[in-house]
Amino acid sequence: MGAYLVKKLFLLIPLLFGITLLTFILTKALPGDPVLSMVGERAQPEVIERIRNEIGTDKDVLRQYFGYIKLLLQGEFGRSYYTNRKVFEDLLLKFPNTLKLASGAMIIAIPVGVLLGFISAYRRESITDRIITSISVTGLSLPVFWSGLLIMLFFSLTLKIFPPSGTGDITFLILPSITLSLPALATLARVTRSTLIEIFDLPFVTAARSKGITEFKLTTIHVFKNALIPIVTVIGLDFGSYLNGAVLTETIFGWDGIGRFTMEGIIKRDYPVIMGCIITCTLIFVLINTVVDIVYHYLDPRIRLHEKSR
Image 1: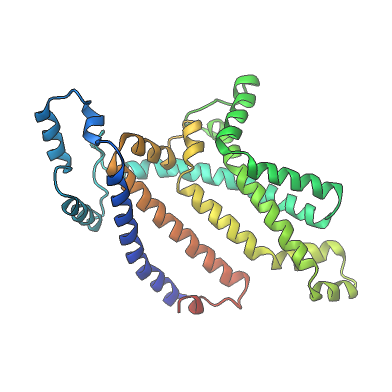
Image 2: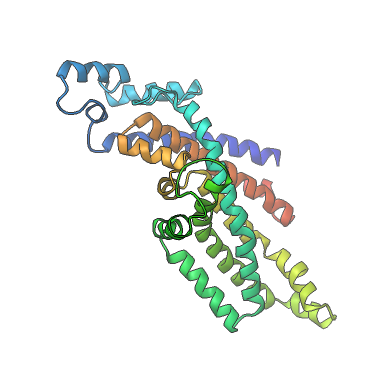
């Protein structure tokens, strides 16, 4: 496992280099000038030039890029063009909010999604199975911005149970967590169902039934244990994407997390914010995938991490 983790660490270096290069090129290709967005097109030319000199956009692209790499090596993401605050400090402030939202969504999605998939597989080809499958397809089909607005309309504006937007205590967290959980819940239900049905048809299940093991014990212990790897994969990928900032959900509900921070940076053409958010998201995703690989090893000892590191 140590060799695997060391290799993961070394692979992170070229990955981050490629991500920074690609993101830098794409941000520079965005139409518009960040300075004009800050001061307006009617600002005096000397004011525009002074601000460009202060933020470094008057230099050629290569000098800007290597200057940013130098900042990264110092553990910094630069300063926001608009607030002049360190991007790294803002990310540290906003990440706990995104972590709360992602955790809330997964607390809802994991038990409900797995349970629905379990019931659907256990009662396959029944009316219950068809209803759960229809719910899963609907959950995957509804755009997040649409389901979020419907949830806000019903629970906040009609019933007036929860606040419609903002960042605060658990009452502010419930609606965005439900909205964010719907796609993961639907995916988990479908993956759980298909995996369990596939395992039900394997020879060891037939052998276990012939020995008189009860259907409930067979399903909950033997079958479900063998279905955990694809389920853990979905959970890891979804949790990683949520930690990267659920842009639409955070924007709709005014949740002050990384996703909303990224969106604001893109709208304002705040290049240090965009770069800092994307690099942070990359690191989070690699970390989550590494954790999932380690969990694979413990779920199925036949999967050897040193083999993956070759």
